[in-house]
Image (cartoon, rainbow, N blue to C red; front, side, top):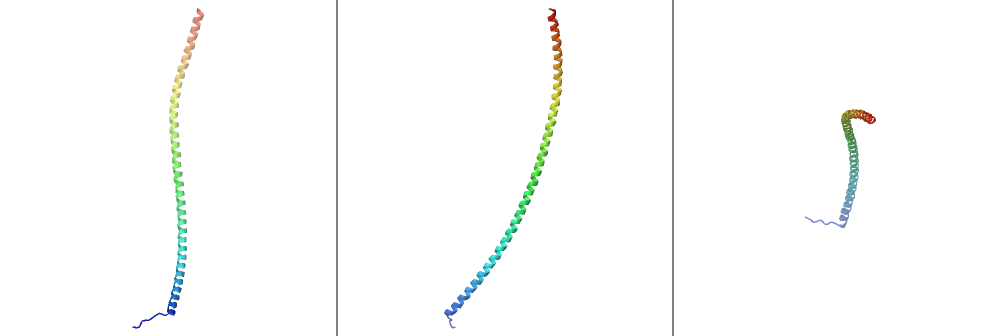
Length: 127
């Protein structure tokens, strides 16, 4: 078997081939990176659009829930107000009847006082 030796020309040809392969490989890698970059940007845009859509849905849901809570609070407020007014009315009716009873007593005392003053006056004039 004979040994083969490479000549300088063979090495130069080999070196040139490697350089061409490296340049070709670099070109393919750069093209692939550019394509991957576009794909990533497209996916990122889609993710962003979905995120905005979901955020809008959450915002709408929150607004609807807040409306429900607000309406419930209004109903409870009206219910409490109604209960307070009913209880106040009961108290007012009771107070009014007690006041009228006391007023009748005061009128009665006033009449008796007037009567007593007349008697005292009559007695004083007799003396």
